[in-house]
Length: 288
Ligand code: DC
Image 1 (cartoon, protein in one colour):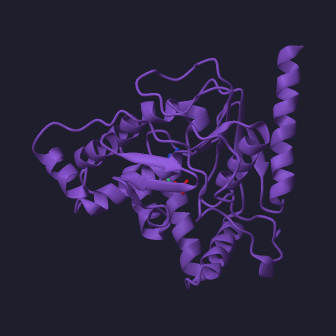
Image 2: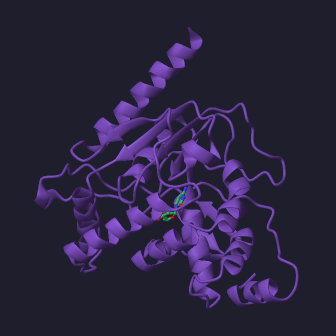
């Protein structure tokens, strides 16, 4: 279904409700990377597209397996949660869910339908109708590879705005829960531990100082040949944090039973080890 067809479906006929839950995203190109110049750990690099985390098998309509273990990793933009989620999933041989990609895809669909993010009904209809496929590190929407497109800052900002709407969040809820498949799932986002998987076995809240996050984002854009102003990025991150934290529904907040991990001065290997250690301890505690 093209963007134009989808837009006309939304305004006219019934929505097409695709029956294929998204596969897990294997890469998150705009997630955190270290700013070597600032003395940040250089190993905080992006996950490789060929990450070994399992691809979820789409299983239309079968529903998720509630008994399957879930590790949730929530946190603010550019805290490195995508990288950590991917690495932890690879280490455990589990599936991975990049929930932010679904909000970004919704934002892209809104933009393509000519919306400016001012209509909750339109955004929710587009979220319900998302025709997406995550495979081998690439993300396709309506058959088109949009992996890089959805990582643009403008799409991230629009995603943060549409994500504040209850109808959009509820449109994406079941789709996210469908990722819960054996042998396990690592899910990253803002509300994985609080709303989407409240019964997760281990909940991590991955935080990092906003200045560190802005530097990571700055370096990453520079590496891609995109010039960006550090103070603008800092302002942008602050605004996005505020919007994600202050919204009424499913705000960015650590679940009461989450373990907070600060990645400001830790490298990716250390952070992954910390999460895996917490998982092992949790697994042993459950057996005992
Ligand atoms: O993680 P990200 O930067 O790709 O997410 C983009 C936006 O989507 C983020 O600013 C807020 C929203 N989001 C959300 O509200 N809930 C999630 N579980 C994931 C993302």
